[in-house]
Image (cartoon, rainbow, N blue to C red; front, top):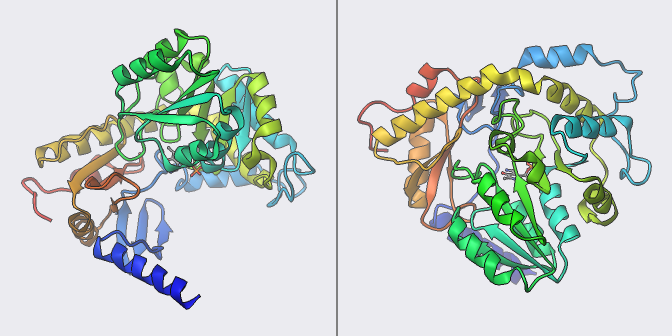
Length: 390
Ligand code: PMP
């Protein structure tokens, strides 16, 4: 026992040496600001992309719709949905999602993590090949690991390689599942979903799985994500998104066919063997979803803020691959990145370093994720002209 603890301490020491040790921040929230160690800072690391989670008016409006007598005014479902934990509001959310996406069906989950670790193991068998972008999120990687499928990771956004892999392998497997994020969580660049759809349509045994965690709410004419923007919703077999980011709630969904939904209800372990989220959370999710199409002004403002920060980063000599509100300032060395983050924090900007294993070795970065609650002046003040030193 003593020896095991000693090993753990040695391992954590090594993490400290590399500047990769993590600890939970003590943090207080006040609208778009956070207070950490008595310092109030603008939050530049939030996933509240539309500023809805910090919108007091919205919360007030929602609370006026509540009554302690209503079926949804419950802070626990007390059970799995397959036992006694199924409430009408879940079906309402699913029905509304299906209508928004003009799809047959939708199914909701406790989180994006639950969705991603559960769907792939359910639908992939030993005769399945998963072709996944090299930079997909850890939850998707865990889902792939839990499945019986063989997996090949193609180079990030390299669709020529993906095409080659498909043509080599499509006859050797019963099914092939292409897996990608739409907006990539650490780089903010965007998958070419239309191209992926075209590829999959050349074969009868290929399915497409897209994680829109960072795009739902933010992209597309009515906020349905990059699949709406790229006009290919109906061709995506598993269109996954989370409620915990721009939609200011908690949980996740997949938009899919009736058959896939029924299959997941029967086969998806992270759906079956867990207590469903509290009905009150889904009530709030439904409240936000109903307003989604009306947030275009927030989406447009977020686009302006993102363009401004991208241009300022480039002026400072940090070319940025991002095409979204997630903007990495690529530094490379982990300790150097931590020093940059500390400098920004001293200046009143809560920007966080992202280091391995979250990102590949040698690609540590400051990850800015902007929210429409910020002003142009606030974003412009992050860097002074000619500021290149930490
Ligand atoms: N997918 C992606 C691309 C993510 O970035 C995240 C969370 N950071 C998730 C899924 C997990 O979603 P959730 O937080 O709802 O578990």
